[in-house]
Length: 302
Image (cartoon, rainbow, N blue to C red; front, side, top):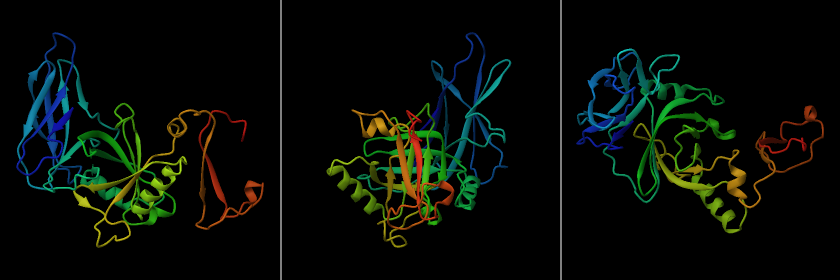
């Protein structure tokens, strides 16, 4: 399933198409369900989708006002069964695909990521405790300076340690493993002093040292510009996307020697220095380092 154009303006109609395959010789009906998701209780409108070629069905929605957010899914029915995509969750048909009308003309010299959530999901995300790792359903629309790509069924959560209490909060985006973006299924988005993180990455890279990659990007969440420069001068209005240090990292950072274990070290409290604490884990002070195994080929070192 996909919608086009990926980012419609207020003068564009939007065509939603899907490939639907059933048992040969079976009659099938395909419907598009859509609504403006200001509440989970608003009823979906139904439009019958037409067979346009092969197994592809399509329906067109009219042009809408700038900022309009549309939630949608398809429902296919044959003589005995009904299926939806995205599929319903255990709480109902609430984790669906989204698109949003946007008349903003963005800076095309930097990657531009749009994160779309229903209004109830965005409100839930804003109310989460800073230590929560709960995710909300997200549609990602990513412009990489060459083309725009759509990924439905993503998840957004709060990330970080000391930065979790900042406004806006840093984010982790998880993409479906069967539909990655350029081979990537996890992305970290930081906003605090993003220019320093980007510059630091370039300096380490020039020195030939391994580290996570960093890209300066723009982000909108439901059209909202979360980092207006006048309110966030320390980052110049831009985010930084950081490579996630996970099980894929060793082969990317050390392509000629990807074996072995990967550890990530971080301060439990913000304090400079690597003072020796104690060999006993239960006697360690709150200022010491936390060492987390990320990718293990052997557990004998623990």
